[in-house]
Image 1 (cartoon, helix red, strand yellow):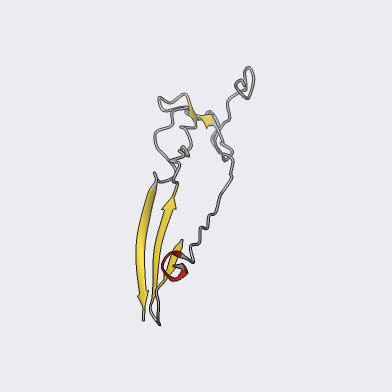
Image 2 (cartoon, rainbow, N blue to C red):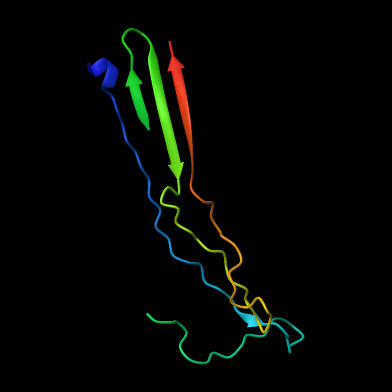
Length: 108
């Protein structure tokens, strides 16, 4: 029985991360040598694998890998040019949606 259903393994890896800092600048620069930053008004922050062994010299490995299985969205940076129509608008996703892959390896 152990040869048919034994030898299972489950592995995982987890990544914890925070957002990246943003640089905000004026859409219409009044300086000739670089980007001008707008003045801050108010508060800077708003509120609050699987293996199965077969009898004899045969070996079969069934594997499944899943990425972003909880479908956690990581947004791309918002528009940073103060005064433009796209300022503060997040228009895309920085990571990929959930996906996975399966594989089978037979060794004999």
